[in-house]
Length: 525
Image 1 (cartoon, rainbow, N blue to C red):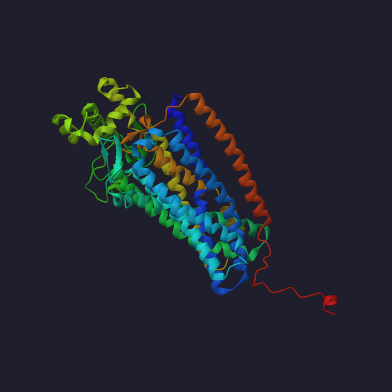
Image 2: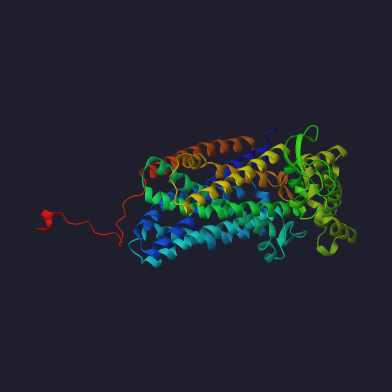
C-alpha cells in the first residue's frame, strides 16, 4: 500500500470514525432503556426501578462524554483533511449536520444535565420528561447524521451547478426522505438498541454469577432481553432492506459483498462462504445457495444482479463520457458569462454531466482527465472495484453475529418468561462472553458500508482522490500518531471507569420513595 495523502487521510478518518462508533451504539440504546426503566418507576412507584435507572444512567454518562468528544473531532476533519469535499458538497452535506447540532445535540446535552442533577429537584413526571428528551435527542442526532451519510451513499435532491462548480440542493425533501438514509437510520439505531441490550444483559449476568444485586440484575435482564429481541429482529430485517436498496443504487458494493465476478442468470445464488481472489478475479471454493441472492437483492426471480466485471465495463464507459463532460465544463469556465458558453458545450454537458464524477477518477493518474491514456482509463475503471475480500468477510461475520444475537435474546426472553433467570450458570456465562459481539458487528457494518463505497466520497459524484485537502505526508502521520496516542489513553480511561462502576454496582438510593431507617433505641428515648 502506498501511503500517500489520500491513503493517510482515509486512514485517519477511519481510525477516528471506528473509535467514535464504539460509543454511539451504546448511547443510542441505553438512552431508550433508561426511559423505559424510569417509566416503570413512575408508574409503579417502586424504588428499585429508580435505583436501576440511576445505575445504568451512570454508565450511560461515562459513554456519552467520550462519544461527544470523539464526534467533535470527526466534524473538524471535514475542514482539515477534506476541504475540497466540504467545498464541493458543503451546500448539501452541511445542512443536516448544522440541524443536528442546533436541534438534536443541544436538546440532548441540555437534558442530560437535568437527568443527572434533577432527581431530587424535579417531580417524577418532570424528570421522566427529561429522560425521554435525552433519548429523543440521541436518536434525533443519529437521524440527521445518517441523512448526511445516506446522501453520500445515494446523492439525490441535488445537482451540479457549472456556474459555481459545486453541488447544490434543488430538493431538500428528497435529501431528507432519501430511502437509503431512512433505512440506514433504522438499521443503525436497531443495532444500537441491540448493543445496549447485550451490554445490560451481560453485566447483569455477571452479577448473577457473582451472587450480587440479584433483584436488580433479574429485572435488568428481563427488560434487556425483551428490548433486545425486538432490536435484533429489526436489525436483521432492515439489513435485508439495505441489501435490496444496494442492488438499485450501489450495485458494485453488492457485487463485491457477494464476491460475484460474473453476472449470473436470474435469480442469482447467495455465496455462503468462499475465498475471493482479486488477482484472478474469482471466488475460490464458493458454496452457493440457489436463488437466495436474487430474492434478497431484487425481490424477484427474473431480475439479474450484475457482476463485478460487467459493472467495471460500465464504469469504463462512464469514464469516457465523463471526459466529454469535463471538456465541456472547461468551456463553461473559460467563457466570460453563461450566455457566452458555446451551445455545443452546453449540449454535451447536459447529455454527459451525470458522468462528470467518473472523469474525476482519472485525477489519481493525470492532472487533466482529457490527457488520460487508454491504460489509465482502464486502471480508473478497475479502481471502482472495492477490496472484495474485506467486504465479503466483514458482511458475513456481521450477519453471523446478528443471527446469534437473535437466538441469544430469544433464549433469555424464554428464561425470563419461565422465571428461570439464574437457574443455570452456562447461559449466564454465554451472555457475559457475548458482551463484545455487538460492537464487533457494528464496526464491521461500518466497514461494509463505508469501505464498500470506495473509491467514492460521494457515490458516482466525487471520488475520494479528488476530495482531500492539500496536506503533507509528515503532517498526516503526525496527526495519526497523535490521535492514536490520545484515543488509546481515552479508551483506557473509559474502560477503567466503566469497570469501576460495574464492580461498585448499584448504590443505595435515598430518594423520596425510600423508607426512612428506624431511629436507634437510645436516640428514640
